[in-house]
Length: 315
Image 1: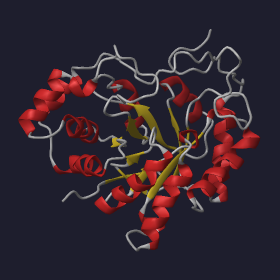
Image 2: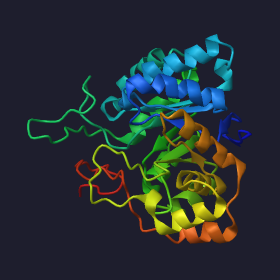
Image 3: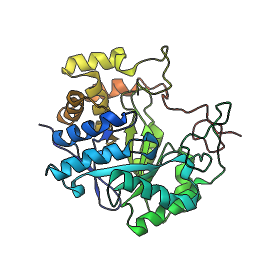
């Protein structure tokens, strides 16, 4: 039986180190996935406005509260401010929309999903007739200051960022009054992010790994893209441990002191992923997995042209 473990945030709230990711979970499937996860023992749900499924996540949570499996205060809920809502006047409205969709009165953690703002409005992905994303020129430091007001209002307990680079993190630190509680980034053996992780952990910023399995089902994946779970080294360690490649990859993040949010809608895999809490990789295993780094990003969003792009900014 796996037992949940936690990382303490600057506000002393405990964040479970293993959560259920909900990106790419279809609305018709995610309610049952949430129910299955809570039944297995997950106490951390990772959500976002941009996933367009928060109402269904909320339905799963409500069902498990109603049947006595959990109380609201037992479950750590993360959500994210989407790129179309970066204007300081939109931040509280966006958070309230998420609260209403999830059917809760507060979030445990609210993140700025990306540092780059898209065109304001109700359309989540505002492309022009040529498929080019329409962007806004809003400073993420201004967005952050509006995020801080949400903590004062009790709409969320902690705030953080996602997909920021090190320079951007330092710019937030230069102006913030509320601590950066968490930084959610793509992280796996092909993208170990050592400098960024070290800086965050040294500065009491917890790190969450998204796409810990390499996100083989990301919407823009190509047939020619490599598959992390088929990496020979990952498969070798999995076989030697009697574990699945997914369990090894989740454990890789956890063992670095990094929160991990693998996505699944399959009850058996949700359970298997949770059991990554139950075993350890050897120091040699960890070294061999760290050596696989090649700075490979599955979620680079290189087609977005913006001066605040964290990886390929416009000059």
